[in-house]
Structure formats: structure tokens, C-alpha cells
Image (cartoon, rainbow, N blue to C red; front, top):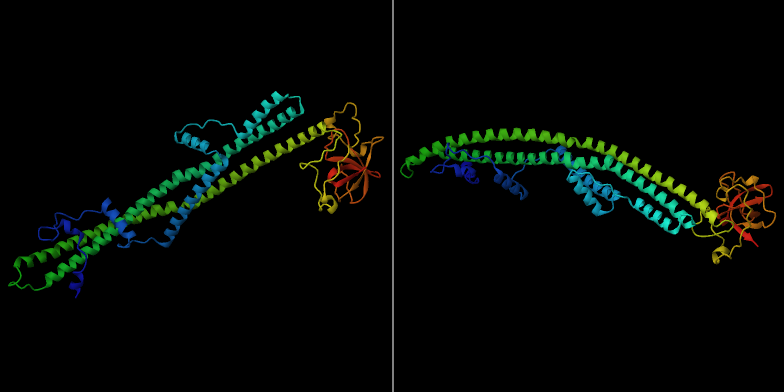
Length: 432
């Protein structure tokens, strides 16, 4: 029965090395698995036609973790490059310079270019005109913003983008190379296992045929002799296949250990990328802090120049810098537009004190109201004073208001008895 089952085994791959009678020849051993054999084994595994040596669960988890790290690192790197340089043509140019190992030329930022245009426009319009002065101030701030952006891009490229690129172009390429070698070692190991199984099957078949008593009247004596010699030859082939299997198993185990150590190094990569991410956040925070400080200074400068241009006139608009009421507007006020507000009386400018700095040196408790022209105003909403220079308000109370040269047009000086301070115009209803 065993002989009948063994006869159904597939033909031995050693047939190409057989002698003239179909038995293997000791002078022609089976060749080792080459590139064609490896490709064939890989295809058969994908089609489910060949057995595959499975890796342990821990190793598979390391492989999946490495693939996940590589994929997300690529996505984060690409999107950070888009954040730092939205222009795709500029990104391609920088990429080519890096591949050619050449220094990337310095490029003017959008803020610096805008600053240049504003400065040129101010010279044409007249640097002494209000519009020209404002263009110069805004342009200088845009230049500072552009310089801050340049520093941020440079710092982010060094501290964040470069480590990500080094991982993808260095560590990951090494890991991929060792994984390919491990794949080939595994395919060689599977081929050796298959060769050993077939050699043992052929040996068992030859042994069964040699154990049978030949009928010399129906069987040629020479066939019996060849069957006996075939059994010995297949025994040699089994020994060779076992030796090749041991060698392939050793090579596979060695390569698996090398690959495992590289994959476990992904944890160190995560720690390094975490540190780089903290540095990127610090650089971005510093950049936005510089931008905020520059814009805050510009806003203060524009506020003083705005008061200089429109001194003595109340100008209400949607871009008002005075605080908005905390409560909803009354229904009557929301029903229609407010009537035009007449001009607020202005205290004459003090001798020797420029109007542009009047607000900065203003102490409401020391300001004397004008002899005539003060106005009454009704408070629309409660207002809590932010500091000692402001006057707290209660809804529906009446106060006296007037303006000073150089003040922000969104603010007035308010008096209530012996109390005096700045009040926001949007909280008041001026009475005629």
C-alpha cells in the first residue's frame, strides 16, 4: 500500500540530472535554486500551489509597524513641504538642487516682495503723505514677517524635514534591502524543503521496487540490478538535500535575526522623530509669536496715525478697534441704521506736545474739559474698565463726553461726577 501511495507523488525535479535509464546520476547533482527557481516558487506561493515558511507573529508585527511608519512618514514629509513651500515649481526646483548636491539659491518670500512693492508705491505717492506714510509702515512690517518666515522655513527644514528624509533615504532603504534578502532566503529554504520531500519519496519508491522479488521470465535481470542501484543513488540524493536544507535554514535564521534587529530599531526612529516634532512646534510657535508682535506694533502705529488724520471727528466703521458690547443690541437699534453722529468737540492741542503722542501721555484725571462744546451721552450697555485710564459704565446712565487730539476715534473722554476716563464710542448714544 505504501508503494502505491508513493507512486502517486509528483515527478522528481532531479529528472534533468538522470542517467540514460531514468535514474539519477551521481556525476550530475541537482542544481541549486536560481533566480528562475525563486521566481517560480514565489508565484506558486501567491497562487497557493506551494507551501510557505511562515514567520512568527512578533516578526509579522514588526514588519507591519515598519510599513506603517514608512507610509505615514512619507505623507507627513510631503504635506510639511507643501506647508513650508506652497509653490510646486519651487519645490521641484529645490528637490533638483538637493539631488545635484548644490546649494539652493535664496528666494524672496512673499512678505518681502510685498514690502518692496509698498516701499516703491510710497515713493511714487509721496512718503510725506498719509497714504505714503502708512505704506511705509505696513511695508516694513511685511518685511519683518517675510524675514521671520524665512527663518522658520530654514529651521523647520533642518530640525524636522531633514530627519524624516534621512529615515526614508537611509534607514528605510537598508531595511527594504535586508527584507528582500530575507525573502530570497525564505524561498530558498522552501525550495530545499520541497526537494528533500521529493527525494525521500523517490527513495521510498525505489526501495519498494527493490524489495520485490523479480520474475526473471517476465522481467529482464538488468532491470532488477538497476532498481537496486537506484535505491542507493536516491539515498545519496536525500543526504545531499538534507545538507542543503540545513545550510538554507542557517542562512535564513541569520538573515531573519539581522532583519529583526533593524525592524526593532523603528522604536528608536519614533523617539527621534518625536524630538524633531517638538523642535518643529517650538520653531512654529516662535514664528507666530514674532508675527503677532509685529502686527501688534503695526496696529498701534496705525492707530496713532489714524487719530492724527481724523482728529476731532468720530468715524464709525466695521473695523472699529473699540470693544464690542457684551450683550445683544436693543431691538430699536437693530431695526434700522443709527442717525448721523455730529462732530465731537476737541480740546485744543497743548503747546509743545505733538498730537500723535497726546494719547500716549494722556492721564484722564489730569485732563480739563473744554470750556464749551461738551456733549451728553446715554450709556447703552454695561462696560467694565480694563485699567485705571478707562471709566466703568452702567447701562442707561448719562455722562459727559468730549474728545482730545490724537485719540483713537473709537474712544472718548467720559466724565461722571468726579470720575473721569476713556470710554468706547460703541457703548454710547450721543444726545443732541
